[in-house]
Amino acid sequence: MPVIAVCAGVMAQQTTRKGLKALPKTETEKSTATVAEALDTIVSPDANAFDINGYDKPLRSRRETFFATNNSGKRLDAMAFTIRYYDNKRRMLHSASHRVSVDIPSGETRQVSLRSWDPQFNFYYIRSSVPQRATQATPYDVTITVDTLFVASDRK
Image (cartoon, rainbow, N blue to C red):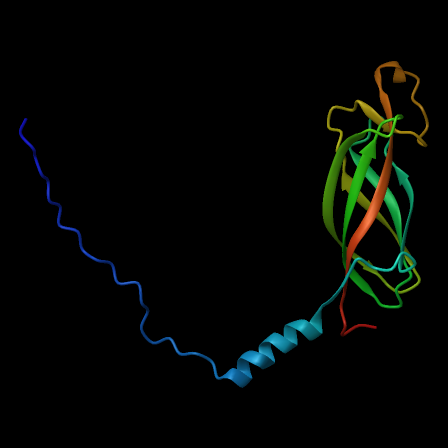
């Protein structure tokens, strides 16, 4: 059986870029420090630093809402949290993590609204009003755990 060899002229591509210069170490440290000073995070905040209340999602709603209260003593710019959804027998139906921008001064409360996890309108929150046609709908309960609070340190 004859062997056919094909040689293609392959040119090497130069990947180095000319004219690049490293910043002096002090400038690099300054820029890193500026970013760190501008934004702080509180990972796994103390249970008393933040309250979640008033969760609601009626059967035909496209949105889930709840109220977030900032008890941390600092102005919050964003928060990351996890919502877990359970049926009546405490079996987990779904879990979702979110990061939302919020501007909550210390000691104040704001409403947070999310797109619903239930796009087919099959579920309703157990403490919501029960719709008349809820025979095919399933009630559920939630737990919301705040994972991280994002604090702008230039505002107090």
